[in-house]
Length: 614
Image 1 (cartoon, one colour):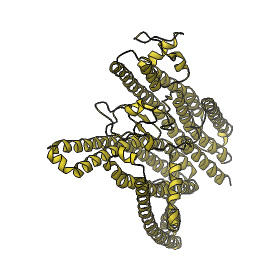
Image 2 (cartoon, helix red, strand yellow):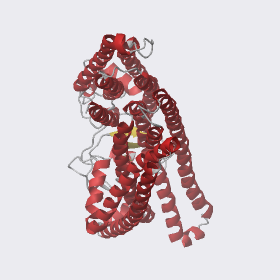
Image 3 (tube, one colour):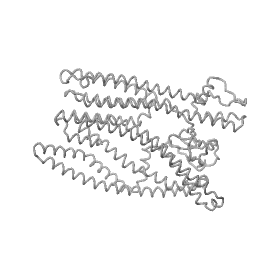
Image 4 (cartoon, rainbow, N blue to C red):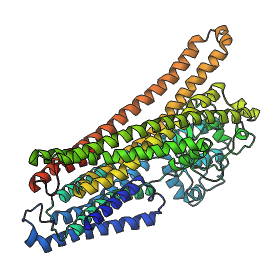
């Protein structure tokens, strides 16, 4: 009962680490609540380390061998105290670096100068300012809207000079803030490496520690709790730092429900209001960091004009709903109601296939144990039973896997056909003003590329999210059932690897959006040129149209190269971490099998655990 209770506690702890790492529960906390949670986790970490030391001291004279590493746990308390000191210091350093870099921003410098003076600052033309800058800064006005206030107030200066000055301030501000975020990230990467190193050290300690048989349950729980605290400390501190350095954008409720930020280098991106491409050479826009909504400077200037081009051809959501993975999953399930029988068959076959896959390594371990037993006493009964069971599992897995592939492919094709039909029906009923602001190539790109990409994540959700979730939970339970010590060692690298891929996915989403925007622009250029081929030939602009098409393709290729380089780097880091953990598992697992002569852990169990980990 104690062993299974320990397995349950460790499994729950691992699930809590994943939830905290994903940020699903921390992002809704206020700054004060996050800081209180961080302090509580530090206290729990220190208490768990003290408990490990106390339990080792009380039982060391009876059941331990006196080894400095295995029997004494002073290093556990030292590491806990080191985390309590090092993590806040690194976070404070990251905050100081961020604020010092951001202080060089011309907008923030202007805000500090205006806040130091009580009366409104007169502009260069000598006229008074309608809104005091100090009040605007105190009210939390964003840098973009703050610069807009300056531009609207300086009405006596030449319009072109004022626009150039405001653009230079916004450009410098955007570049400086990117540098500040980059330096803050580099500092927190050091804390990330410290947390990963301490997690691995704690896992090695858990495996090689000589447990008292009477206290194996509380000692194992304390090691698992320390592992949980290490990850919670880092991710909670990172979330708190993000809240402290969060930049406020400009909120325009009648155009978009999220704040907008001034961005540079958005080549081939189109405005979501007037649907015109961003103009060079800087390709500036006001962009949403939540859903990648783009607003060109021309529409931004006319944001208060209800008769501006494109304002009537678009409706804005008023419910404040954000398109998250869960929201997308709910919407896509609603679209699959038309063919619910096929969808139910796909999900049922997926569950059965994953169940067979989860149980298969356990049977493979039994096969190896049967072979070893046959070599010892000549009995083949256990080996034959395991082989029959393995044959049945593989046959069922192949059957359900084939049905799953057939049902999923059928669902994907039916869903894509339904989405294209509904999209075309909606487009054909749009107001004429919509077609005045949209290019034909952009509309056809929505019906072809974008429609296919919209339903493609359903296949990813079924094959990756649901399937991997079942493998994670089922494999974790079976791994803890096989060896809870090696399971805790393996769990030390799960949060770092998952966190790395999560950050890469967030970055790659923006890059992929740029890639598809460039491909859509290339498609639009080709469609318009071919549709008006007589005009192109009449004015001899073949080379111009070819250059436009190649420019868009080159932009997509450059973004693709960046994505490939960063993806390969993340994959290399995760692979080295994963392979290193596999090496440690085989080393300590092999020592555990050899030292106990197969009594504590058999060779088949070690092979089973390695299969679950891989």
